[in-house]
Length: 72
Image (cartoon, rainbow, N blue to C red; front, side, top):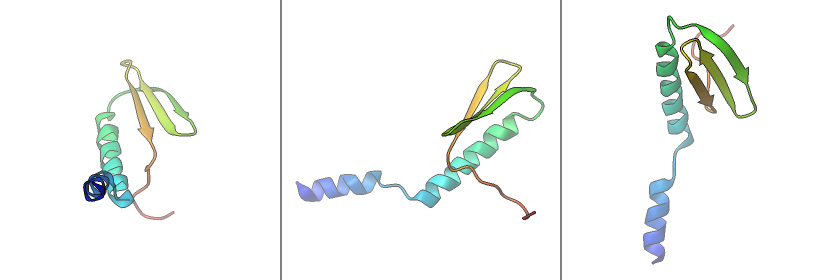
């Protein structure tokens, strides 16, 4: 029984760097989809960033956000 439980726990363990990379790619794709749209509001909250557009959509970004590019 303990071996089976250990196997199940290994299946649900997630690597933080992998999650961060996946979230960054997803955020990049969502931001690409916003090109040409009008942002009507944005809010920065404790756990997320929410962006609303003029077509009535609201995009929410949670943790793992980062920046890629040259340092300032």
